[in-house]
Structures are given as structure tokens and as C-alpha cells.
Image (spheres, rainbow, N blue to C red):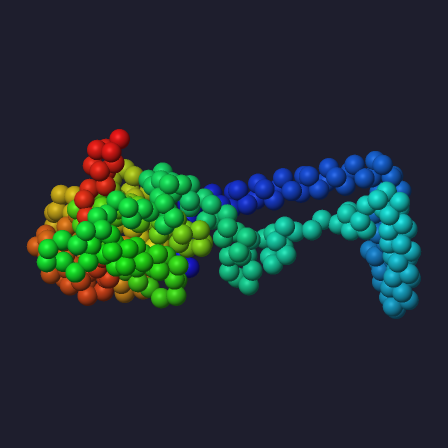
Length: 332
């Protein structure tokens, strides 16, 4: 699983801040208990100092520490029992003065077995959702809010299915399954069709679900991505930041490249697109491309190498119907 460094840094800041807040709340509760029963503070201090005091004494005199350890055990049991009784009289559980980690898997370190723990992945997912929300309406664009009512249920002459049936069976179901099964094996989609047919909505729905699973997702327009590649290549002032953006595009778990074909197609753009498509295929990273162009138009616009990889390695999902934005405006 790949992680965006900038988003992970924000996730770690939030993780550490909330951990600090929990520690402060615990210390406040602890101090409140000590003020109600000062003897508990004394017991706590004795429990902390007994071991080092007795063992240090035994070692200093060169004696066998075993008897000292036995004395320590008995002393600790006596103190623990007194502590338990005092807390019981106050109506408090016997472990209320013990600080417990919010995550028992990693002990609130954020890492487990050299890997990012589930708890930190949740922080990462939330920060990534904020990042994606800058471009997408993640609150309104989900699989649940995707309405098939905007597509005609009439079977046009020469067609076997209505637009609604096609969009449900061929497109919606494929996108939903893609999101639900993400991570099992790399897969790529080409969403193509005229403007206003729901490509952005279903892309956002996929991004939302995949991101919620803790996977790194980059959603950006093709024009902006190519601009960042150009900034990196020609060393403009923001070259270091552009390099970070290029790394995100090439290394994220899921790249959603929006509006391919609206940019000015130069030799550099051809090269950058080939690098994106080919690198991600070779490294088995998933990509979704949204475009208003048909595969035939893409083949005319871009190099044969690019067209071949997209047509051969991507699942092609044609969007059909009438412009939903226009339909909504007409029905207002």
C-alpha cells in the first residue's frame, strides 16, 4: 500500500495531537482522583519506587537479588490491595489510574510489525478524504446517490438495451464492483462518453470508497497533471513541489485522471501520458481515465503505444444517454 507523504504528515500531526489530548485528559482525571484520596498518590509513588530501591540495594551489596525481589512482590501485592480497596470505596474501577492505549494493536505508536497500523490508516483516510473533497463532492457523489432515473428506459432502434439498462448493468455495476474489490488485484478503467453522463459522479464514488479503505488516491485533471510534469522537467521555481506531485501521480494506489483530451496535446504531453500509463501498468498500480473521447478518437489524438496500452489493459466503459446537467436545468 502506497502513502502520499504530504497527507501522511498531516495524518501523523492529527494522530499525535489527539494522542496528546487523551494523555492530558487522563492526567486530569488522575489528578482529580488523587485530590479526592491523597493516599492513592502515596501508593502510586511507592509502587513506582519500590523495585528500583530494593534491587539497587541488593546489587550494591553484591547479594542475591532473589530475596529482594520476593520482598518486592509481597510489598507490591499489599499496596495493590490497599489501592483496590480505596478505589472501591470511591466507586471507581481498580484500573482507573492506569493509562490504556486507544489502539491495543500498536499501543498508540501508529505502527505494528514495521507496517502502518489500522488506527493510523484511519487518520490517513480521513485526511485524504479532505484532500479529495477539494475537487469532488464526496458528500453528494456516491454509489447510493447515483440515480439511473436520468437515463431513458426506451430501447432505441438498432439497440438491444435502453440507456438505463446499459448504464446499470454495464457501467454502474462494473464501477461498484471495482470499488468494492479494490486491492485484490490491479485493474484499470476507461470511462468515456459525452459530457454530463455521470463519469465524474461514479469516479468520485470510487474515490470515496477506495480512500475510505485506507488506499492512497489521487484525483486530478489531465491538464493539471501534465503541468506538474512540465514544472518538474524544466525546473521551474516550484520544481521540488512539482516533483512531489509527480511522485504522487506515479506511485499512488489509485490514480483518477480526469478530462483527458481537453489539454493541448504537445510532444511533451504525449511523453508524460505514456510515462504515466506505462509506469503504472508495469508497477501494477490501478488507474482510471475519464474522457469525452471515444477509444477511436484517443487513438487518433495520442501515440499508438498509448492507445494500445489503454485498449489492451483497461476495461472500457462507454457512458450513454442525455446530458444530465441539461436535463436537470430543464426540469427546474
